[in-house]
Length: 122
Image (cartoon, rainbow, N blue to C red):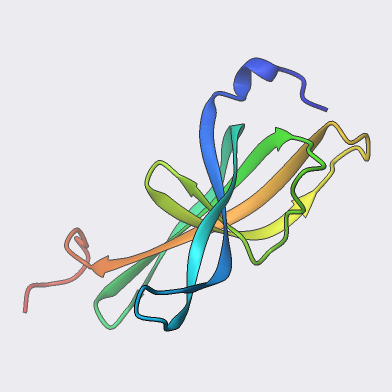
């Protein structure tokens, strides 16, 4: 149940991989937008992992959207929110009342470890 519909104040876009043909006639797979909606966004957890001086950040977020019958959501889709791409991990209808959907998604980003105060300089 969406207790406060005013929390649905973030715009997200769902993408699905689809086969397309390039102008040269080659077949390729692209992420195509499938559905845009308003969502409530709740951070779940964030963690950093370091391997060979490369930091991988993992962010998990819970998106709450209104229930819709027009699109069948699955874990092969991705969500774009604030110029970041999130991979869908799980989708639930929390109260089986067909009023809202809760979608758990994660985003990974990699980069150099430039802010690690525990290591000495090389």
